[in-house]
Length: 175
Image (tube, rainbow, N blue to C red; front, side, top):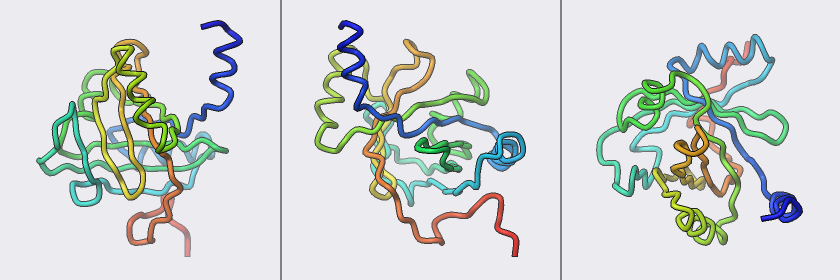
């Protein structure tokens, strides 16, 4: 592919999210607020009751799981911090191997382009390692870590209008 072709291809692509894993979500969010003035954070709890269709390496996750997620925005980029609590080892494995840090970058893919996009990665030998759905948000983790040192995530990236009982805010609003 020529540089001109790369420029044209990438002109319409959009990175939606950058995500890190952490051992202590609250401590990490506080560090982002204190040091970078980034926040406030919307804190979600993902469990086998709040997330659907979680699959790792093509197999349904049947064991209970829980991970905490902090989300905020910096311009047009969503920032995500993930703390594993228990269940499938995907995030804990990352912490054990690499420690806290960059986990994935998520690219927006329209629903109608998802299958063709996934097929193009499969043709390159890049498999899907995890899938799932939270509300209307689908995600597909690609096995790019061996080649890029991070996971590429693809998803439909809808704006979620969650009811207040589904999340908390950090730092808490002062009364």
